[in-house]
Length: 255
View 1 (cartoon, helix red, strand yellow):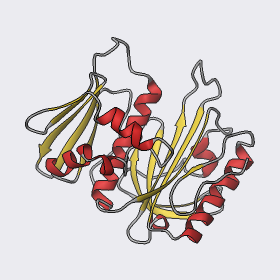
View 2 (view 1 turned 30 degrees about the vertical axis):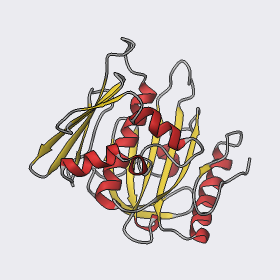
View 3 (view 1 turned 45 degrees about the vertical axis):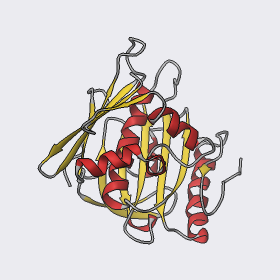
View 4 (view 1 turned 180 degrees about the horizontal axis):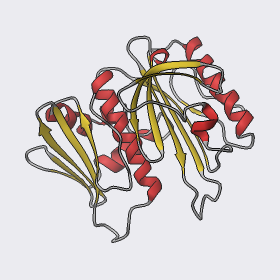
């Protein structure tokens, strides 16, 4: 695996994908496949995918560039061992891109990379949490993920949820960490992305984002996983909205 330490403040955002450009292009142009890496399972995801990737989108004839209506442009550069996928802000509006939007793209392109490299033909199950606050010391320290090795290296950590996870460090950026997790799939690995977002004028306490992507877990295993994460949410974010949970085990509705 290539070094995937990246910085969303450096524009444009690029990731190396161990797949040829044709495979990456298909992941960008088939709505059912986009829905397996963009965002998370939630009501309205299908409409969001069509709005962002297909309404007013312009495809280059060589299938190496996709302009999303002037807002963002995807560029595919074939290299010897795969494809470099780049997302760059467009000129629409004439303003600097919002940092939270850039953080979202960081998450999404890493999910695209993971889906294509690890589970190209599988449907995901997602569990999402977000809050405009952060635990003391930040969410990575709170979870016990503040001393991880470099991207591509093996790790094992006992989370503050009480569960031990293991796999490889998938990527690291200024505010996010992505980890493959053996127990998050019945075959292969799943993916855990944790974002420790900085303080801003609109978010004076910082922010927390968590996205768990699993594959092929049965209803019981998925419900248990979500129960651990919801218990953690209740302890550290007692006034937050519930987890956003899709697929087999249904939504988590606790307050």
